[in-house]
Length: 153
Image (cartoon, rainbow, N blue to C red):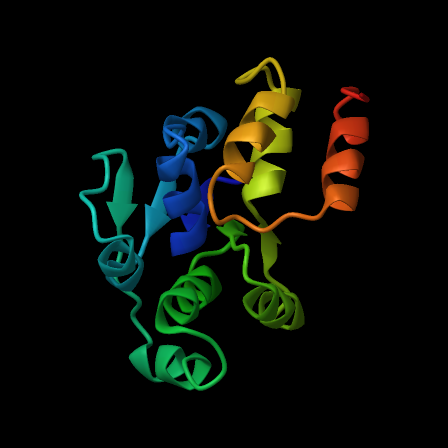
């Protein structure tokens, strides 16, 4: 397991919207984020999420020319912390993280991990909650996720 997980805003917002933010705490021991992400989240973060400033601001500013500032700060912080895992949902940010050889997952990956380690008993109720928000997920992805988690309909 990764020692440090760095979350972008999207994962925090979506888990908060469905009332399941604690899944992050139960799946990953150490969750950190940046002041920029905390600002985008715009609510008080639970005390188990540590806010850490990026040291190399010039690198962060460079990344901001390609992606939004919250994602740029999360990626810049991941470059500074060895063996970290990024939580990113945005496709452009995920592609950039991949090019930078960073390890990442997203909301659906967290849900799958939560099921695998017994934090949740079923993926379907979480997916149903996600569908009631503005989280975009295709029917094909839902089917694959359910199949992966042995919850075929």
